[in-house]
Image (cartoon, rainbow, N blue to C red; front, top):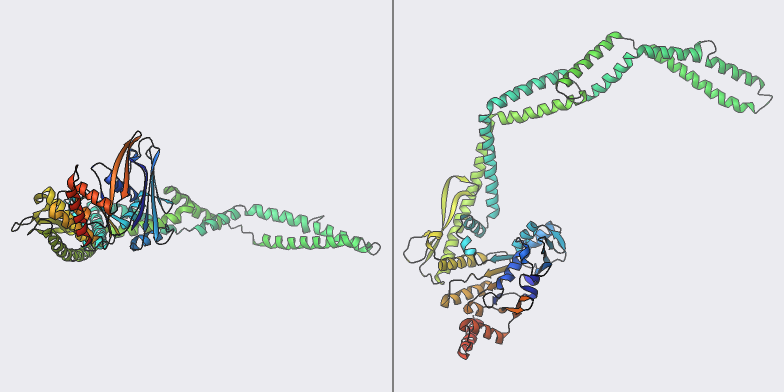
Length: 555
């Protein structure tokens, strides 16, 4: 739950440090004191977009921070772990900095994050019901999401949407094939011919290296043989051959080495030299005997190289790229073979449609059960909100082929008076009735919410008297399961709270400032008396306020 909220230089707030507890807390104060500014600050910390106008006049930036405990927020704990943002287990710190120049930065546990990440985590920590949220209740998308949330089938709804997209994708491919069949067949024919030509060539990267090496050798065979012959002549077979010279030198030194042992060292150098030259002679003779002077083989290699180069030029690539072209051609033919088989596509479309309908039917069944439960519970809540005999219904209107949202459209219906036929919420409910119906729905859905902190921003607008007292008790009861905060102008709602904060605005030379203070028992009596009596507070009003707080204490 929310433990603290820190605000610096935000709109008309220069400095606020607020500590929160559990249960049901109300924020009260004069109109324009800045109560909604606190909700705005919290909304920004939960990922709402900002603008430079939120920075207090004359300041360079605004800073917001909120600390949460995560004992009742297992989803948030897992999200932090998955995103490597866990710092202190069981706690979480959100921070937002907005500069007067327009730049905004967000942090989770001291680490920079995107606004989307802040929004994802914020949705698991706080659920804010704003002043105008009951108007959004008229939108079909909001009604559908509310029902799916109540039915705990948001993930199934996402699977249905994905199955629909897959079905439509296969359907589009089938239609495209039917429309472009001639062009696709022409491309397949070209690729088949190309594949056949490349396969007939039978060329590989290994062959390319071998062909080049053999061609170089055969082209220069005569030069190679002449060079070897000349080398052998100078080493062993001609007049003054190296081997003969070395043999003579070694013989002469052997004849005189006995007279000077120092010559033995020279002999040790010359002997290996003679052996090395002799080995070279053996090798050269062997090479000379196997030098290939086969003109026929050379012609064959040149013809093969010509065929390879011709094919490569045709496709405007290098010879070494020909094997890759063949692989790409085969791969593309496989793709076109699948895409070009209308029977396969039709079969795939049918399978995708069937998969979609199976999931959509599961979703419909869950929605139907949830619709009945939601209608019953909201109707029960309406009875205590000055709508005795009123009835709330959730209608599932079939969609023939379905859509990305399922096999039905969701529509909320209401009969505000006994005996009236339920009609669309947008056509029947007045402003006050819509506000009460919205509160009834929020109370029902919030009671099953996994979000630990619920914030209500003047959702009690348009009600009063006995109904206001019932609303206060509803919120108080909700506070036993969640941390509940509510901005209210109604003393009946304020009296039901476990804690009460007063928001006030003061004027000074450098502009207006908003202040917040936690009220003790005596101060609560004064504040509720002000809410009851307006400008002039009498002892009778104070007595009435004290009685209201006493009643609250025994609820």
